[in-house]
Amino acid sequence: MPVVLTTDGGPHSAETWALASAEQLFLSMIPAGTLRPLELQAAELRVAADLVAIYAQVQDDERNRLTNGIADDFHTDPYLNDIVNVVKVAVAGTKYKDHFDKQETINWVQTMCSQHIIDMQHVERLWHKDKGENN
Image (tube, helix red, strand yellow):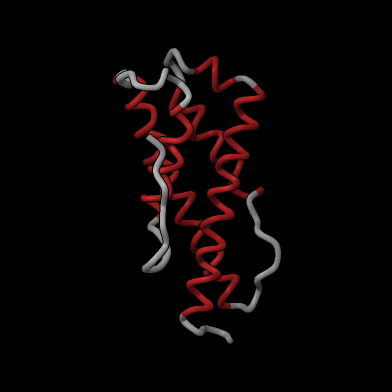
C-alpha cells in the first residue's frame, strides 16, 4: 500500500523517503491483494538501504543551497543516474531484472524519484523559511 508522507513537524528523514520510494518502485510488480515474494521484498529493502545515502545528499545539498541564499529551480538530474544504478544492482540476478532493464521502466523510475526529490527539496525550503533562516 502506498505511503503518504505528511509534513507537520519538519522534513522527513532520508530513510523515510527511501522506504517510501522503494515501496512505490516495486508496487506494480505484483497484483493487488497478493503477498509480496521474499525476493521482491529483499530487492525493495536493498533499494531503500542504498537510497538513504542519495536522499541524505539531496537534503544536505538543498540545505547548503538555502544557507547560501540559493533557491532557484529544483535539481533532480545530479541524482538520477545513481538512483537507476541502485535499482539495477538491487534486482540483478532476480526475476525482476528484465523489467527494470526496459527503457520505459527506467524512465518511470526517474520520473517517480524525481518527484520525490522535488518534494524533499520543497519541504526543505518550507521548513527553512518557517525557521526564519536567511529571511
